[in-house]
Image 1 (cartoon, rainbow, N blue to C red):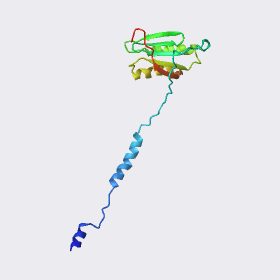
Image 2 (image 1 turned 90 degrees about the vertical axis):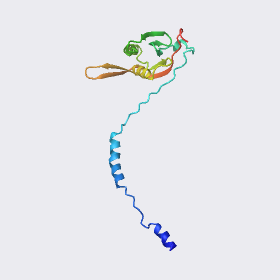
Image 3 (image 1 turned 45 degrees about the horizontal axis):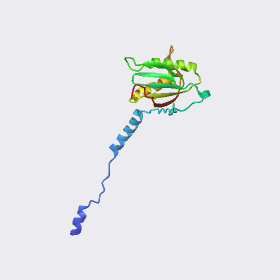
Image 4 (image 1 turned 45 degrees about the vertical axis):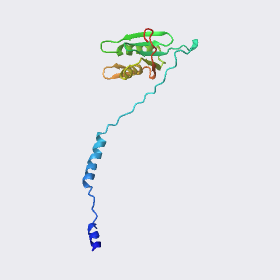
Length: 169
């Protein structure tokens, strides 16, 4: 009798798992996710650290070394060896990227073989500002009749810290 009670407790029939609804969901969900997925293109810019400006430079090696210094109130364009070539104060809308692009295009005409430039930033400059300046340094855009014409300026960019101004810290 004890055996019958134990035997009655266990069900000899195994339950089948019904996964039909789950499979239907997967058949619909997988193509939907593949169609709506955003396939983004990764662009990698190789950046270099600029050399120290305190290093002595031989007279014959004094070539044009473009530096763009981004300060809180202005952008300075200059040559590491000769000094400033242009200062562009902020406008009401922020940094004067148009004047910067124009100056860089002029410098590219004077030095067509030059491909490298250094961008030096003061403390607390926004990342968006760095990206905007890098875009202007790398490529010049001209609006043509039916298209935008892009010209490479100085694609080999180095980044670093701006020198401290004399009146500051």
